[in-house]
Amino acid sequence: MKPGLIEVPMGITLREIIFEVAGGMHEGRHFKAVQTGGPMGGCLVESHLDLPLDYEALTQAGSMMGSGGIVIMDETSCMVDIARFFMDFTQAESCGKCTPCRVGTRRLLEMLQKICDGFGEDGDIEKMEELCSEITKNSLCGLGQGAPNPVVSTLKHFRHEYEAHIYEKRCPAKVCRPLIHFEITSPACTGCTVCARNCPVEAISGERRQLHHIDQETCIRCGICVQVCNFNAITVE
Image (cartoon, rainbow, N blue to C red; front, side, top):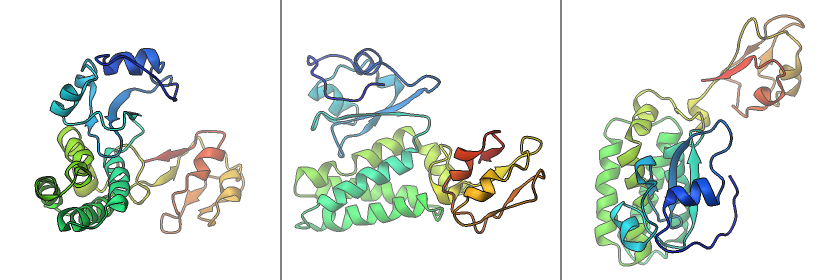
């Protein structure tokens, strides 16, 4: 994948941009979604790859041309976290003049953050869908009217990820830290103590040349142990 600034003719397909102009996905990674149009654009999936890049086609698909930005995601991207990221931007950019945008985007952001933190509840998805509809219909300007697009599109195409966060307390992409945990496995662990020596909160214990263990209550899920382990002995679930 080659990030950068490109100039392409109107009508070129997303597939051509992603796999020819940008060079395709990183080796071993798979295309998951593409977000077009900047923070207020929607997330499109594989079935949209042959969509021509023009105003009408993108709008009909649930996204927009917008600023012309394109963000390409693979399986390591959490779509709930992606929606939260873009909502954080649009909420901060709200001028505050109209209540639907000022309060609605803040409430959406709070709900998305709650889900990413592992506190999602039954009914949250339906509440967000209703709130998105009200914000879109009643906001005074384009920012408020388009702000829910990332949430609406990810709920449409990746509803199962929201459900995994809420009902299973699990982040399928292993991005949302409160919803993942690290385990040291045997016999891969050699007891070299590298992970324990590098843990910033001393959450890892164990004797040299013995299987080590992670205290889940102390662990801050920073991932340093995975980075320094030379034996792939630490799994992320």
